[in-house]
Amino acid sequence: MTVTKILVLFDREMLHSVSQKVSQLEYDKIILLNHYSILDADGDPMFHSDRIIDFVKHHKIEHVFCGHGHNLEINKTTDLIRNCSFTQYKNGTLGSRNSHKDSNMFLYYENFAEENIKIHIVRIRDNGDQLEFDETLIDIAGV
Image 1 (cartoon, rainbow, N blue to C red):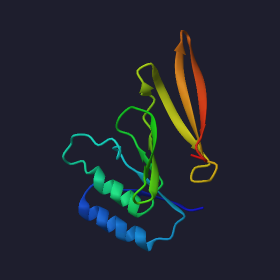
Image 2 (image 1 turned 135 degrees about the horizontal axis):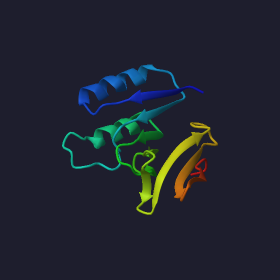
Image 3 (image 1 turned 60 degrees about the horizontal axis):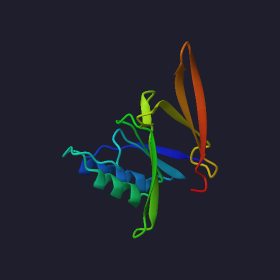
Image 4 (image 1 turned 120 degrees about the vertical axis):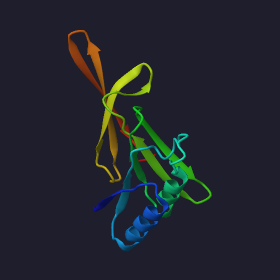
């Protein structure tokens, strides 16, 4: 299976150029790697997530990876009107958290872009003089 990775900036002309190039390529799946979340638009006037979301929907991109905020989140969005859906993985860092009491997390993927994709979430806990690692497995194949 061929997975094409595209790094996209927010500039309208650049998105248009990338979109034209994508239309000329043959691939099984496209993933989008983006610094900022496209679902959690902030107040920055230079942040045009609507354009990126339109790009994602137009090219039927199913997986969007981002960082920026130090939160670990996995969000699936479905547009019932346009009949399209994508999942955004906010990967975070070793300082990531999804609540104030659940910090120091990272994730990795198994069988990415396959039908049986799994996400492994690893939490690191300080237990006095040693570190403990707890792993949670999320099977999103049927989601």
